[in-house]
Length: 339
View 1 (cartoon, one colour):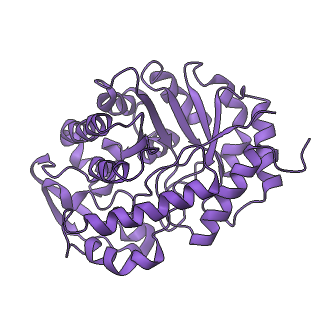
View 2 (cartoon, rainbow, N blue to C red):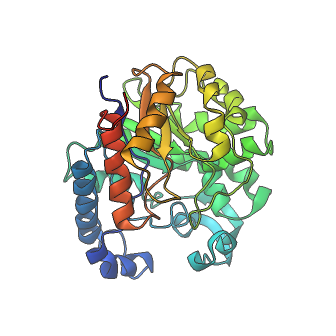
């Protein structure tokens, strides 16, 4: 059997030796320029580790954003804090903001800037990611109070996407946990959700691979909803037909894996990245991951299938992240006892 392609989502554990300097950046003591050298050095370590794992496609590790999207609000104009982010409280520690004007981001969200910084030292880096407009709105913690600002947020994401393309990204991924949660809970219409995923891709050149990553959140290694399936995403995927080239689906919650047969109904225009390596648990064996790949190959052709972690590895213990992705690569290459 030919090897199945392997990729990753985005985040990676922060390199231990770089933490003291990076903490100064996270605390706002260093700006983007002053922290550039340490951010680049940390990303170099991350990319080397991913290359050593054997991943077919690497990413920069989001060393500039250790808490996923929650670094974005402080970079925005037009918002003011009501309650600051407290990562130690997990799901309960999400910050809350309110609008104070028209939202803009003169400094950007940091994602395109990071891709430029990382690609300068690793020409093989060609995949970049940025959170979706609704996911940034979620990080503001204001419920529907930012609905009137969604077009502004969408323009901010679009600028990041186009900046990444200009910098040489061959694939741009929009991270959309909020959309997956809203679809699972039927909290917004499919068209309303799809609208804000289409917007940032509207001017992307055809040669660029457009990817969306759907998961159910990962705060303190816990999902943000207990409604866990794949079938609720199908109408949304159908609404993105012709807009998206790849869809990355978290497949590790029991309900999601039980729903895997619905992957047959994913639009044929999509390649499917199956997130089968669980970042919220101890690393599965090569044999266990290989068995999952076999089950997926009963549903999807190898030409349409890629495999990855369920979400970013950034919240995993460092050694577990390496073991997980190494096992995934071995399984994807058929290095197990399965026949």
